[in-house]
Image (cartoon, rainbow, N blue to C red):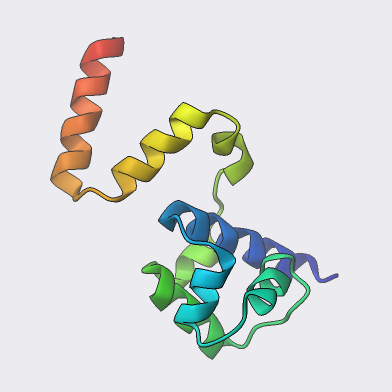
Length: 109
């Protein structure tokens, strides 16, 4: 298995889950099948740049996000409450995210 393809697949999975989508929902956005998305996420399927751009568009991220180092998603998912907060904040606009941060900072400092 190609390590680079596996890392890209893990980042695709990260952004898919952050969006709250199943593999099937991403596949539908790509006019593909869930099994294809599964192979991509496991690094078993090599991607063309055009396909990677299509995935980035579907997930509403910049294609460069798939090449940037990210915290492993599993570390967030292990704590249900942190994961719920992340998903809730992801749906908000920037000003509401900043306001939530200020509230949390005030509560815990």
